[in-house]
Length: 114
Image (cartoon, rainbow, N blue to C red):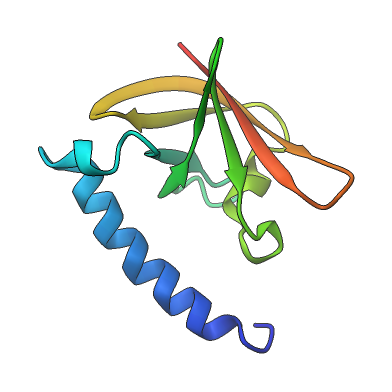
């Protein structure tokens, strides 16, 4: 683990649990205008992992910027287009997502919703 990474991991995991619980609750409107939950299946493990993400709506789905992509692994499961589940404004949706690595080191995930 890179130096200085441990506090980020602890905060990210505990904060993500709280935000995810809120996004699944009847109080989701407090955050769901800007945040959604994305569920990604691990390529090797086959396990499902769910994360809160910020999003922008597009004509055919969502654009999810990956903040600090060098510190996150989930988006790497989407280098090839894969099925994902999204909880968007309190509603479960299915779609296909693909990570896009930009030349500047930035990463975003394009989600086409079914």
